[in-house]
Image (cartoon, rainbow, N blue to C red; front, side):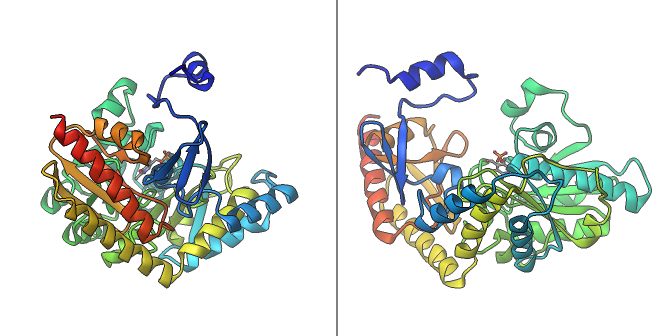
Length: 399
Ligand code: PLP
């Protein structure tokens, strides 16, 4: 098979930060993607938990097209209606009082860490309350601050020195976290369900301990819901299943249904330490992306939609368990964020599945992550599990 010019030229012109397979996608519809040969793929990964409404959702396309024809960008130096309307929706549906918008998950976490540093300075009137506590397996992004709170040495080591005063405790180890959070801590940052780290849901005891320790030491509790938030877990916010509220929550991936956006949601007292000029972003919260996000938010923020995500998640886990493959050690996760633990590297499984028309991703070396569009149907779930079962059989037969 001759190499597609896109694949060839990419190798010449792009910084090689990704090892992409030789597939060139041309369009998407619902939960299916189509490559340049017209081959159809069932999308069990939704652009890494981004395309919550699937591809080319009719309402999303209509609203985005109409807004693009009216107004896309004016900068944050002026008022526009869509970003206020989006902020209002996020505030009215969460613990938060105010929102700062940006363009990605990394930036949303960067913002949260900056806010926490300034809040600690202002409230404690100390310059040394700067410690940030994060956890093993965490992934908070690639910018310097977010990377400093990201655990994997593969991501960190080439870029040091990172920002100082970040310490890691084992995820879900309440006692270790309690020991690490102290009077010098300004923030604790945690994913209620770890995504990249292997699809690991937090225990209720762990999140409750973090809340108590943060209160005891006047530290801010940041929930990174960039991947697990906005319906992915079957709840609007993943932490709603735990009955623990953060002081700051970060969002990104699914919020605008495929356009770049990030959001940092905060309590009033956190917001009010920030002043004009303290933080900003040229592109953030333009009218186009905020209209797109309103469509996604209004569809997901509906109890019937969320019930359906929970039920479909249970159905998907059940179907995966029924595969009864000796290669799968565990099926875990919440809602439509599911991890399959293997005791072998899973890279080959991804390429074998793709060759059979199914797109799945990993979360670390030995975990397959399944995070389809939230709009997927039961029939589409079963179709994907059938292909995955065939993939497992083929791999099993060859080892
Ligand atoms: N936080 C979590 C939990 C994530 O999963 C990710 C991305 O995978 C990020 C932050 C970084 O988001 P982005 O890639 O949009 O910067």
